[in-house]
Length: 80
Length: 168
Image (tube, rainbow over all chains, first blue to last red; front, side):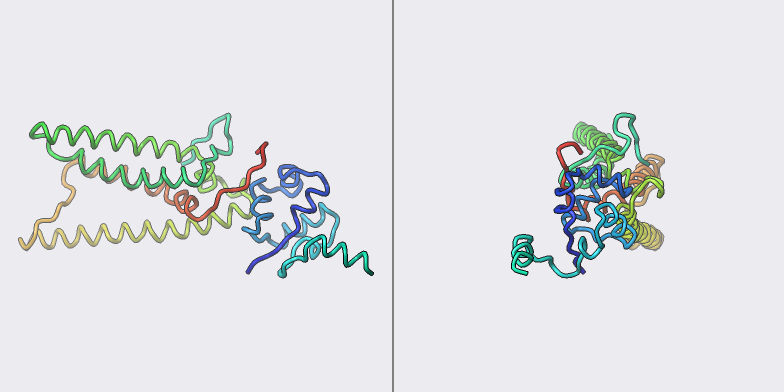
């Protein structure tokens, strides 16, 4: 099963490097790379730790369905 | 066995292609080298083969040393508390595969020895069996290197290259 995530978007927004994020959640920086690439699905514990770093619900970070493109999400928010 | 250096406590990162090449070199050059080296030195041609065999064994050992200091070997051999969940999950998968392959090789070896003894004693066929100390020595070091590197070899073939940031 593929797990989609917005990790790179959140990380870029916070101006964090992979190393900083890895240190914050206690994993190897390469693991962040594999997560962002979708090559590895995190455990519930790691997903919750990542969500806590960005102070966001875990569903905003990970999904079993592909996330809509950011531009479309912003446009939709503008309409409503 | 992981050779940890002070400058690279997490092991040397080898691109997957290089790591796979080293694994293939180790697993092919060593047996070929041993086979050539153990040819009896009764003439010039066999002496040349013996020297070539020795060179191949040395090349295989060089590949082993490079693998032993790699981040793949660290992942395969590091104590559990020092690995994260992804590294542990990959290692468990690799150890499972390595165990199956190693068991299969040992089983095939025992079957070969059993059959060769049976065929030799009945005089039907003559199969090579290790008899001299050199033969057992070559087998011992071959199996030792195989046992020590097989999990890392599985990691080299199951993983894709990580996306590294410039400072990683």
